[in-house]
Amino acid sequence: MLKGFRDFISRGNVIDLAVAVVIGAAFTAVVEQFTNSFLKPLIKLASGGEEVSGVFKVGGKNGVVFDYGSFINVVIGFLLTAAVVYFFVVAPMNKLAELRKRGIEPEPETPSDEVRLLTEIRDALVARNGVDPEAPVRPDPRTPPQR
Figure 1: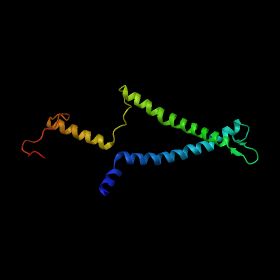
Figure 2: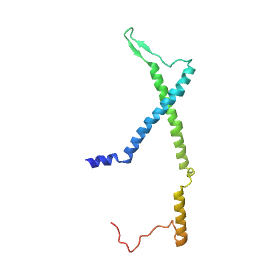
Figure 3: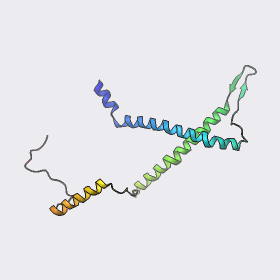
């Protein structure tokens, strides 16, 4: 039973989902602060310094209060979050996928020093031994087959 749970937890998709939730929470905080710091002041400026708010009451003195201003604020926050996600995440990823689909890969980064040195060593060994590095490796006929 514990082995099954361990296998479930260590699957890649569960870990990816956990990472996505954590990143989503952090991203939400960034978008919320961006909204509070920049967009709400712009909305106040456009509305003459007033908060976007409002309520109405149905049913007389003891009636039900409908807070449509809070709903409008949440809708604006949702639209702003969706716009940020689309323009900074979805659109660039779609562009990258389109380039890959057409066979145009983005320029690779310059190889690290380790990769460059290993490539030089490989090329020197090939030059010394006269072996094609791209040729498939044949097993040694003297070794017993592995099962």
